Length: 187
Image (cartoon, rainbow, N blue to C red; front, side, top):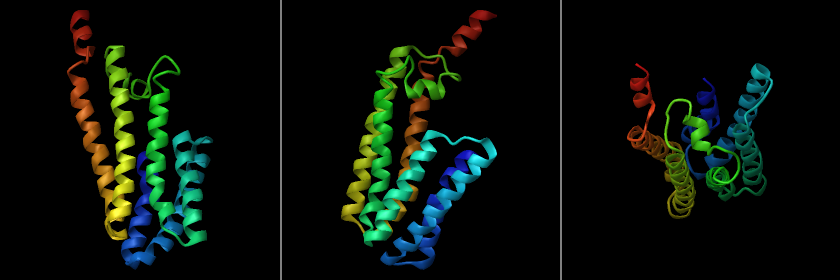
């Protein structure tokens, strides 16, 4: 449920942009996304009395980059938001290589899979590379294609690439999963 709520600002942005149509639709779509991001964060706060750091980052990026887009009437700011989030996420993954006992990937999936630490570290670095490239790809699409093409890429391309990449990582990890081995030895 929380994951679906995180996508509501993007879905609202997409819906308003497509409903109004045209390059100028980016401004009401941005305002709508900011409002929905605030509502989603408030809803999460009222339900759980806390807000995950990633959700706060996304809200801050919507407010700052969306606000700059509206204030200066320049869509480049909102187009840069996915890149900034990708690169901040890459920096967090990279930082986890050196800070703490577990990488971000291991913290996220370590309960479900038993994998050697060097595999987690390698996989974590691959995620760093993925987010750096995803951010660069967003900038490329924003600079070289129409606003409509960028909106489609932002919604379907980014999510699709992330889903495919995550599934590929799952397949990769299954080769190294020792959970089944240790369960078989327990019998």
